[in-house]
Length: 494
Image (cartoon, rainbow, N blue to C red; front, side, top):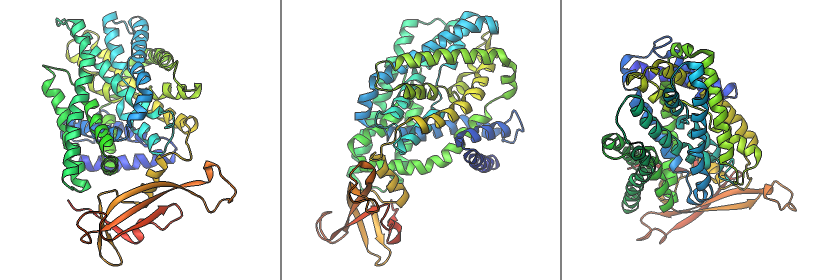
C-alpha cells in the first residue's frame, strides 16, 4: 500500500501541474490520473489501497469541509440563507423529474427505478464544488454578494436532501416496508442534529483553546480528530437517528470563527497546507473508483438522460434564484457550479445493484457516466465563469488574507523569535488598515489607489506580568514593506 500512496502523490502532483499548464482546474487532472492508474484501466493500485479508499476519501473531504466552515461568516449566511435553502431542494427535485420523464423510455427501466436513478444523479459533488468555492472566497471573488457561500451552503444541504430521498426510494423498490412521511421527516431532523453535533464540540474547542495557550499544530489536529469523530457518529447512530455529519463538520469551523477570528484563521491556515495532500488523496481515489467499462455500457442513451436531467436542474436553479440580488450572469454561474457530480455518485451508485434492484446495472452505469461527463466539464466551466463573472472588490477583506499568506505572517497568540537578537516575542494584536499607495498619483482618491496593510503588535515575554504590559512594539506589513521572514521566525511549539 505504501507504493500505491507514493503513486498517488507523484501522479497526482504531475497531473495537477499538467492541468494548471492547460489552464484547467488541477482536480480534473487528478481525476484523470486516478482513472488511469485505477483497477479498471492499468490496475496500478494495490488492493489494500482500494479497500481503505473510502476512509481516505472521507478524511480528505472532512479537511475541505472544515476549511469551508472556517470561511462561513454569519453575516454572509444571513444574506444568502433563504436562497441557499431553496437551492438545496428545488434544483434536485427538477432534476429527478427530468430523469423520471425520459429514463423509462430510453433506458427501459420502471418509473420507480428511474426515480431512484434521479436521486443518485441529483446530488452535487461537495468534493468538486467546495474547493472551487473556497478558492474564489480566498481571492475575494463574488464575496460582496456572498455567491461562493451561497453555492457552498446550498450544495451541502442538497446532498442531505437527496440522500434521504434515495434511501426512501431504495426501501420502496427493494420491498422494504417504510413510512414515507417519517422518512421524509428525517431531512430537517438530520440537518438540525448535524448542526447541533458540530456547534457543541466547536464551542468546547473554542473554550479549550482560549483557556490553554496551545500552538497551531495541536489545535488543528484536535479539530480534525473531532470532525472525524462526528463523521463516525453519523454511521454509529444511523439506526436510531439521522445526523448530517458533513454539516456538523462545517459547524465546528463556523462556531470557532464566530467566537474567535484569530484562532479560526490560524487553524484555517494549517488546514490549507494539509489540504495539499488531502486533495491528492481525494481526487485520485475518486477517479480510481470510476469504472469506465461500466460507463461505456450506458452509451448515448445514458448520456441523453444525464443531459436532460441537467437541463431540468438548470431550470430549477434559475427559478430558485428569482428574487435574489444576483444578475443574469451570476445566476448562470450558480447554474454551472451546480453541475459537477462525483463523490455521492461513486458512493451510492452501486447500492441499488447490491440491493437486488432489477435495473441496478443500468443505474450504476449511468451514475458512473455522470461522473465522467460532469466532474471535469463542470469544474472547468465553473472556474472559467467564476473568473469572468464574479466581482472582485479592490478593497475586499480577503486581500488581507493574501498578505498574510504571501508574507507568512503569524497570528495573534503565536510566538516569534528575532533572527538578529534571538529574543522571543508574542503577537498580541493585529490591525488591518488601508493605506494610500505612494506609487500612485497623490491626487487620486478612489479605492483602486488604496493598498491593504497589517500592523502587528509584539510583546516581549518576561517584560511584564501580562501581555501588553512591559516592552511592546509595532511592525507594519504591506506589499511595499519588507517581508516578515527577513527579521523574524515563527516558533511552532506545542
